[in-house]
Length: 178
Image (tube, rainbow, N blue to C red; front, side):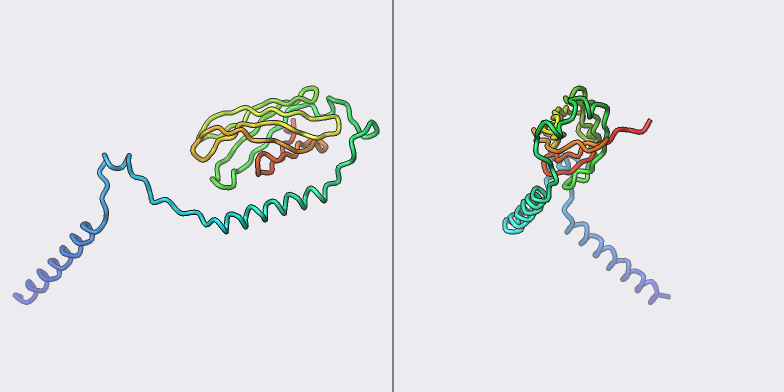
């Protein structure tokens, strides 16, 4: 009986010492420090970023070479209002995994609308659809810290869709079915 009490006391003491050692070794954050806590910054692997950039440029230039665009002339020009209507689409931003909803109204070849990102808010997008179905424009996109950044919009109108390249993100906007 005395031996059992001794072993129970020894095991309890060792458990308390291990628990205290663990608590002492883990950095604690008081509520005052929680607002100022910044995790360690990761260093950039510059060669890897350069390889990724070169690969992206290679893909984009290959797509430009494979383009089946016709030359702009009077024979393949469309009426200026050929792509009028409301277009919508949703895209997930690659780096952050955030969802952005696009809604755009095109009238007489001029489009205007909004980008909605739940975490950051709403920003405008404007574009022009030429008579040869080429799209150019500008959008204000949110960065990962919700700062607005001007981003070029390029693309083309095909059928009932607008195929866009917004910055480095591909997006297809389509007319909603009634």
